[in-house]
Amino acid sequence: MQVVQPIREQEKIEQIQEVLKEQSVRDWLLFTIGINSGLHLSDILYLKVKDVTDRNIVSVREEKTGKVKTFQLSSQLKAYIKEYVQYMDEDNYLFPSQRTGHPIKRIRVYRILNQAAKQVGLTDIGTHTLRKTYGYHYYLKTRNVSVLRDLFNQSAPSVTLKYIGVNN
Image 1: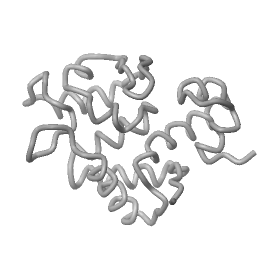
Image 2 (image 1 turned 60 degrees about the vertical axis):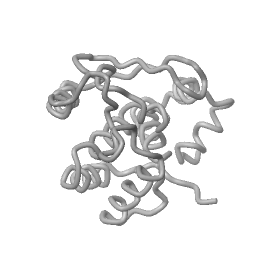
Image 3 (image 1 turned 180 degrees about the vertical axis):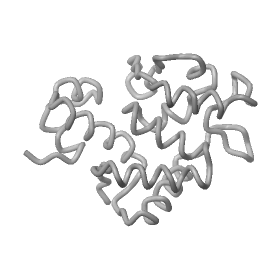
Image 4 (image 1 turned 30 degrees about the horizontal axis):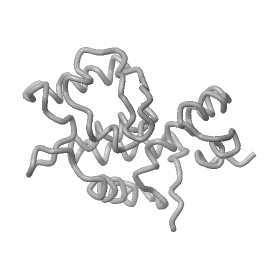
């Protein structure tokens, strides 16, 4: 089994964002919310327009744990969301399949991320990369593994550090 990694370099994050934005604002927004929220992909995919519109803080009940997770939207991200959803109904999924209107599938997200990652010279990228990237950069900024451990609902700080790709 392949172990996916966080995206450690800010420059690579920005390069992936550029690639994604060129192909699809939906894909760019999915990636950007993913690396800024720490949510599981399954929870991101089921976000609806009304969950993120005109909000500073977004609350999501995690499918896996039933716990409520919150994350903050920067003013820049709020502006992008506002533009992205302007022609969408508030009950629409934020990341719909063009064919069905239902959330895009996990395998589709995997392919989108991998294709973008290859274009910027990255491998070991998967759907957990979004969450791991959030955790990795949060840890670099704060060095607070306890908060991350709680956020990720993991058993021990060592498990969290291993998950985000930080080796002591």
